[in-house]
Length: 110
Image (cartoon, helix red, strand yellow):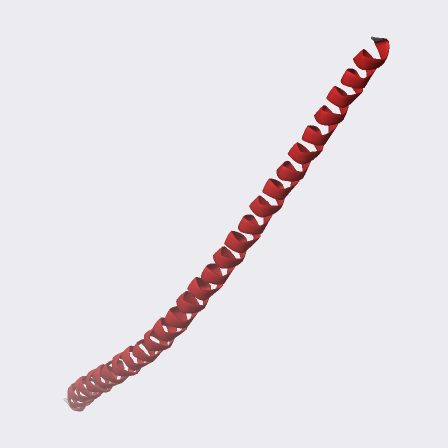
């Protein structure tokens, strides 16, 4: 009877060990699959992020180029208008100074 009990107990422990080994194998396989899915998702996310950054960089460079071009044009136009205004004021002021000089000179002659 003892031998049968030990044999039955040994068979039970062997069955439990085999079952545990299969469970560990399945768990390891599940973990490996999850890691592979995570790596694939991370790679896809990095690729999409790099494409997004590249697109934004190109758009930003184009917008900066356009902004600089428009800003340069505006500065040129404003500088030209300012120079014309200064010239007109200088001519008017020169005429006024000349008239004032003539009036003062005429007053001294009197």
